[in-house]
Image (spheres, rainbow, N blue to C red):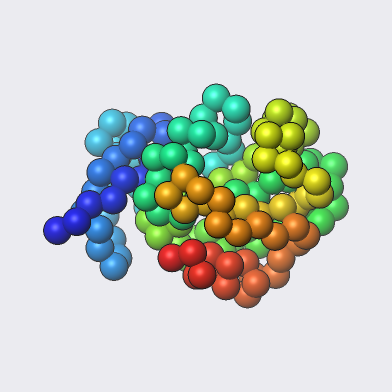
Length: 143
């Protein structure tokens, strides 16, 4: 059976797990928390590259800021869509106000901007708030 590397949403340790169509249970080998957690995790300069490079599943990044109206509107949609993709895609957020170097490094010109990474490489980028269907379609294209 083939294996995939996934980053634990709790402790950010890399776990090698069997690749399956669905999972009833999967826990981190380090912190023992569930790898099925779908709540988007907040990344910063210290852990962004680690998560992107070590995830065999697509990483969906929401570049946002707390003062941005469309970002506030999209936040619950991002969380809602994330719930459907346990161990299929990892949903993460980057606050560009607090992480200005990351915003500059990835040439984020407007927010919200959703960037899809697969195998450590940017595959897709969409600026502007997305509705649940458009966000789901974006994720499905990367699976």
